[in-house]
Structures are given as structure tokens and as C-alpha cells.
Length: 339
Length: 157
Image (tube, rainbow over all chains, first blue to last red; front, top):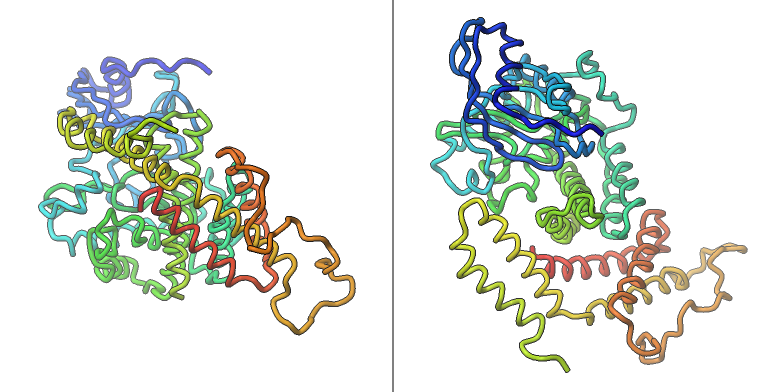
């Protein structure tokens, strides 16, 4: 595997100059926002002269990490998802240019930088952020509805296989495959998987789903929602998967009473969604998909823990993530007892 | 006999010092790592405080549970037909003493204990997946709820 080249302001400037046909581009304030084994996000400012977009471009360069761990969509595919959603009026950062892989030896793309913060604990606790919380919940509902308006097939998303099984079946099978290959057994997860299998509702629809739509994956400023992020897990699925994930107790960051993402009331989130989609959410099915959300998160948490334990990526954060699974198991057993 | 303060107490106090003196003094970008270290120490402290006692109990309970699933029918009325794979003539897998305790020669090392638990839990997981609980679903659920609650107190949550 070729060594990735260093990401420099000059290289980014050259790239933008090519793409815009500008007379001059100067890039400064290059700063690594966040980086992990999967991708890296670099903020920068580009001062563009000439072209049809002269002026200051506040941008983000989002690149595959050098390690090339392929557990989710690479940047090429993520760019296609951002583009389709942006064109469908979803409030995602505007994707600008897909990168030339030869430049840094990793796939990358450039998008406009969005203002605000995505820090989940802060958003949940600090009420001065994100403006009116009822409006935020409604907006998050309506934005999700716009994502779900995108239906298969989509030529630019040919990398997403269209499933021929109900989404719940696919997810249950995926979980079982993971557990079969994992070093430790999880009888409680097996129990819940049986419940999920026995109580599987009919698929409502097959739409594009974000599949990690939750607090922590959208940005807000003092006024409200500024951008939806992280499309690396997006796929065709039952839209209730996203609704269950957003409202699941495990994603409320301690603010359990605010059932919609720890930031607002479920009713407001649903109202925003129903108005934008001109449909009704099958509310009696959401509980099932919240159980599924806990299961999916438990599997992901085990995968992340395994990346540390196997030595693939030594990280205290990954090691601690596996320790979230016992609480998730307790939650799931409580949830299925209720029914 | 080990020197005092022992593992769990030493770790517990070191964690307190970390939280009260070190984390507040850390530069902002390292504070999250400081909290994660404190979290890891908390989990380790609780596991040390509990020791292996609960694991022995789990081993005991699991063994009895598996025996019950394999060898005790759910109801008195016989619904079994000839050639039933669960034949009562098979010997019991382990010697279970009259005091209902599990008999082992000596004490198991921590590693051996974990290995035995892994084997039995894997068998239980398989039985659950295959819907092969022989009418003992309630017992299994009770067991899972008990173990999950204990694991959650250790791992934090």
C-alpha cells in the first residue's frame, strides 16, 4: 500500500485552482478537526481570485485515513451520497469536489464548512445552543423525511445493493453473522435477536436511510440546525430504522425525558417528519425499531471493542466502548419485557 | 497475603486523585482522555472488588441451567415419542453434589474460570439461537436478567 502524502495548504490550493479555473488560490488555517482510523476531517480557508466563485471559501477536506480500514463507505461513495442529498434539499454541507486520489494517495472530497458544533453532550445540556428546541426537533424530523424521500434505484448510488430481504431480516442476519465470528458469546443478545425475529413487523418502505441519524451527527449554532453529517453508514432500509435510532434511549446522552435525540419531544420530531413527508409514521412499530437500534449499537460497540482487543487499533475509547454493551443488554431486556 | 492497600482500594483511591487533582489541571484537549482513564479505572476497581465470586456463581448457575434444559422435561405429562434424542438413560454431565454445589478439584485460576464460562455461555447462546430451550425459557430469561444486571454494575451503567 503506497504511503499517503502529507495534506498541505499548497496541494489543496492547487487542486481548487484546477477545479475552479481560478487565477489564484491561497489556502491557510489548515487544521485537523478530527481524525480516526476511518477518516480525517481538515478545515481550511481558501482565498480564491477569478473563477465563478471568487472570495473566501470556508472548506472541509474529508479524507480516508491512511490505514484504509474499510468498515463503512469510502470518500468516493460518501461524496455521491452527500451530492444526492444536497440536491434533494437536505441540510447537509454542500459537497464541492471529489478529490484526485493521486494527490494524497487517499480518496478525499471537499465540502463547504458548516458553522456550529456537533458535540452531543453540550447540545443536550446547553439550552442556549440550537435555538428553540421544539423547532429543532421538528426540523430534524423534516430533514430526515427528505432523506427518506430518496428511493431506489439511484444510478449514482449503484454501490448500495438493493436488498431483497426485509431490512429487519438483513440486520438480524448481520448481527448473527458477527456473533458467530466473535471470540466471546452473548446469550442475552441471542435472546433479543430471537425476539426481534419473532416480532418482526412488515417492512413499511424501502428508502435511503442515514443509519446513524442521531445527536452527535448534526451541527447546530445558536439559532438551530446548520448541517447533517456522517453519511458513511447510509444505505437502503426501512425508514423506521432511522426513526428508531434517533429516538432510542441509548442515544439521549443522559437526557432521557427528551425522547427525540435527547433534545426534544418525540411528538415534535414526528410532527416535523409527518408534515414534510405527507405521511404518518407507524407509531406502533417504533418500539420494535428502538429495540433494533439498541441491538445494532451493541453489535457496533462490540466491533469497536474488538478493534482494540485485536490490536488493529489500540485506543482507550474503543476499549471502553465494549463496556457499554452490558447496559444495552439490560435496556433491551427491559424493553422486550414491557411488550 | 498481599500488602495493603490492595488492588481495588489502591485503584479506587488513585482514581479519586486523578479526578480531583489531575484532570482539572489538564489542558482542554487532554481532558476527555483523562475522563476515559478515570472510567477505565472505575471499571477495573469494581471488577476487582467483586473478585471471582460472582463468576463462580454464574458457572454454577449455568451448569444447573444447562442440565435442566437437557435433562428435565417442562411438564409432567410425557409428550416425548420413542427415539427422542433427549433420552433419560444418558449420564449427567457433571457430578452435582447433594448440597447442590459444584465440585471442583481445587480452585480455578481466573483464566480457567473465564474459559469455562465462555464454553458454557457459547452452548447457551447456541441453544437460544436454535430455540432449543425445552420449555425452560422462563429459567433462561431469569438467568440472563440476573447476569446482565451484574455485568452492567461492573461496566458502569
